[in-house]
Length: 281
Image (cartoon, rainbow, N blue to C red; front, top):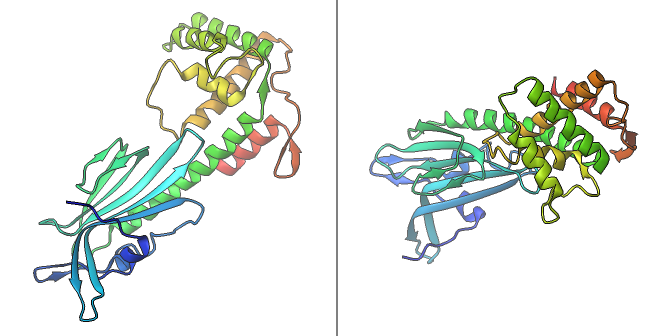
């Protein structure tokens, strides 16, 4: 059976779903206050399990048994975070599912893959308890996304020369060995290998920006770091590096980068980091 694709206007303007003696609010009511919360983020709406009647004038009277709302938060070219809501009115007990996670795949059969969190609600013909939860989730994610993007912007505009990268690698490796760190030496050794390979995106012969340098250090672990925590971990990593440099009393000016332009003002890395921390607090 061929699946028909509906435009979001068709879904929002469709009728409320009717099941036996129960009738449910229209999609416009079900998703009131949730659709287009913020215009800055990509928002998609999908409807399936439709029931179609023809009016006397041959126009269609459509209602949907299942509706899917998804917000796509683009953190970086490679980082995407999803927040979604699936409402299934055609089930024996109508339910709603809120999910969030990295590049989540959500199906209209209610299977959700790759989510870090799934919250399930049973809904009545008038129930909308899922709305407050969705709004709170949205605001929480938005706050972290904005902070993450700001940190990434700062780190991407900070250049580490090849010489500085080599010195930092040595300091970090020595600290790991000296403190018998549970992280072990493999991550930093793998990073050095990646930084030496011409085919690697982390090839550091001409230096790297601070964001790529951090990613080269964590590439080996392939750990399931929450994407909203990655930029903050990068920030903490560079604070640790700064601490190492001060301990060794080596003046290599790692944290005195060239001035660069952000929001029309000449600000250096340290001032940007302080500003980020103030906003976050």
